[in-house]
Length: 171
Image (cartoon, rainbow, N blue to C red; front, top):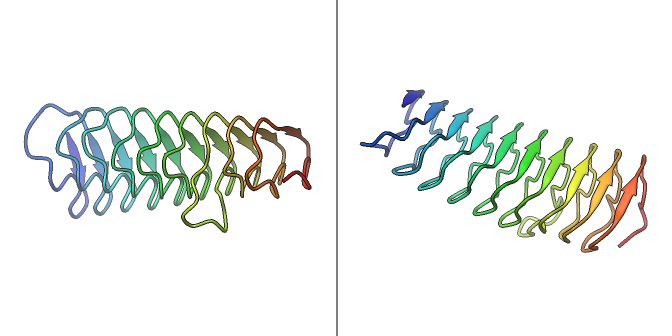
C-alpha cells in the first residue's frame, strides 16, 4: 500500500490490499478491498470493501461507497456515484451525478452527467462521447456520439444519435 497526503488511506489498518492513495483524504474510508488507485483530493474518499477502481482527479468518485472495476478520470468525474459499477468516465463531471447506474461509458465534459438533476441517477448500458453528450439523460441503453448529442433528452431510452447536436429535440 502507498499513501501520500494528509489522511490518505486513513482507516486502512491491516491487510494486503495493494491500494495507492495520493492526495488529501483519498481512499480515506477503505478498510477492505484490493487494488484501488486514487489520485487527487477526496478521490474514492468513501469507498470501502471494493476492488479494481481507478479515480484520478479532484473529487473523482468521491461519494462511491461500493463499486467494482470503475474508472473515473477528471475533476468530479463520477463524484456522486455511490454503488454503480463497471463504469468508465473520462472528463470533468463525466457521469457526475450518477449514483447507481452501471456499465456506462462517458467521454467528454459533463457527458452522461445528468446535469441539472442533482439527485438524478444515470441509467445503465449507455455510451456518451462528446462534451455534454447525453448530459441530462437518466434513461438506459442510449448511444450519443458528438458534442451535445441527445443533450436535451431527459429520460429517453434505446436511442442512437451521431453528430453535433444530433437528436437535440428527443425527449
